[in-house]
Length: 449
Image 1 (tube, rainbow, N blue to C red):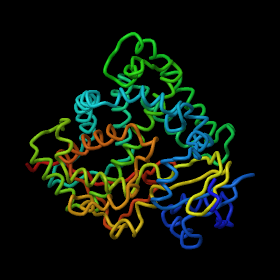
Image 2: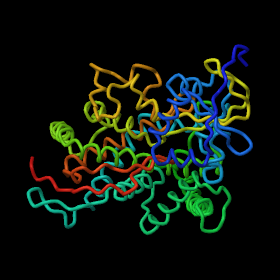
Image 3: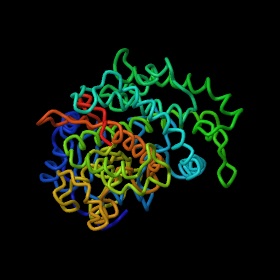
């Protein structure tokens, strides 16, 4: 403990439930309002204990780097996902986390990513081709499509192919419902499994997922193929460590959810922003056409600079995970404030993404802020943090960006899309950012060039 910790953390008097509802309605606005009242740190009563919210890039660095070992990711995440995603790697601490991560990294190395991209490209083409029936050509008008469910089905099918090595077929809808139920359960207000309510649906969804992965496990153990499931079954760290059956299934359920839910969130945001800013849609399409390839290859990923800037700007404006909890397990201090052991701590990536001290005109869509000439994301090591930071930096971030770019490249080549004049997409910010209305766009097939 720092003996110089002397500042008193201000207390937010509204109830935890009222604050939760306010954050669900307008997360960024609520955080900025509370910051004006209390400064960058405040406390709120939470049951018998309390929760401290900490804002700003320095707070993110302090909590995520966790140099004195005061913050537990496992205890922070458990109240939210412990019942539906036990064994999730982001909810582990210390040596257990390092052990699991060492083995898992085998499945995310460059040769594996190159294989995943080759597998995905053909499936992306088939998936977005399914949107074509009845769709007018350019010059004949467009057809309205709700993009979030279409993109979610596409990314779930890709996750099944790349992660599980199977085609979902008739089971796709039931698995999708199971994943949606488990994610929704993480933010259930009533935390016990009352029949018909969110936690009950989430636990029931997990049972279905367990059954599905257990059925596939013997085959994946027997044959070493190129999908994640098989890679996890056969992965060995440099120290010879490997996963047991329970660890494999827990990792697969969590990664399947993360791989398609967070990617869907990002793709939906990108489509919305490119519809609001058609000049950028045209600019990216021109670059995609100039590449001269219908599908991206691994070495193409860094060549499409403007696509990278746009992806990063979408993740700035709407990071899939807008907040991340930790539990303070031993008393520590930050900038003169004492943070007692046993206190929940909340930090907010989305808050720093809208900070005017880090970003010029932060509410404006401006991909060029990531250009080499400006590099606004370099103003602080924790200014742009959609994938977290420290030891728990998202292990799948390179796979996620690879998948988003591969899908967006094919979408730009195949379609044009627009939204109704004056439309503003309403966001649900927790547990994962997504549109409340599914994002309806007018989609038109390209016939020019």
